[in-house]
Image (tube, rainbow, N blue to C red; front, side, top):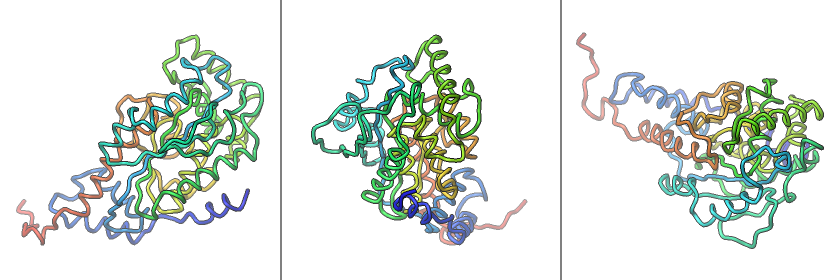
Length: 354
């Protein structure tokens, strides 16, 4: 591994037990029955452990959208052509996509990064240029990228967090754009978890039964051909991944190093999380699953990571949409922990009469 990636891995710590204990103790002093706010209480305690702040108050919210194209689209695995990827990037930077609407509601900043779109962009406000190449290779025929490109994509994701997040002060939401990336992500989930390809492969952009069958066959044959090592995240990424997925894995690693909570979106973001946890197991404690996608591979990936999603809304859009919706709830949990009055402050009796 290169120095940048290794330094990041080594700098990722564990949850702050003292902050979590103080947060749990405070919950029990607030004007409510003990445990009555359910998972909101445990979520706020997790954020306390991540940030090291018993009453976490994070000032910034960022949605990182990484974009990239996939050579495997040539195999007929998507309902849309690769030309849609750059079109959607323009939509993001103009503020017209679903994620832009939801980010405005949550007062979150959207940072769009070209990690490997198969088109060139002029300088655009809100677009970060980190292109490795104009799309990956067709992994049905050859590895998606070189091992060095896999490392570089992760390191560029780490660099994004170094440039934009504030330690223990930034909510990080992971988003994606890339036609064909559910195929790559399903392959990653199958490779990393050992699950059968049929159980992790879904309809993505809404493909027909025949295309779904083709997609499944392409993934199975690629895994048989390349035999990615499930204990080596970079090997998996290089053989069947995508540049934007590597970028997201780096963002997750970098956010954990900066002690910022990471709210995952759907299948693509969670496939990236599998890679990140493979590189640095301590990252697992910094993850919050925003929602459960209808993509079957997402449930498999969540189970492998031991994550319970905040929401389940039958979504499969990507872009970070499920993550930013969950952000509002997780942030609400932290505000309750911080702003509610204690029994003593409110003058409310705590003695039970029955």
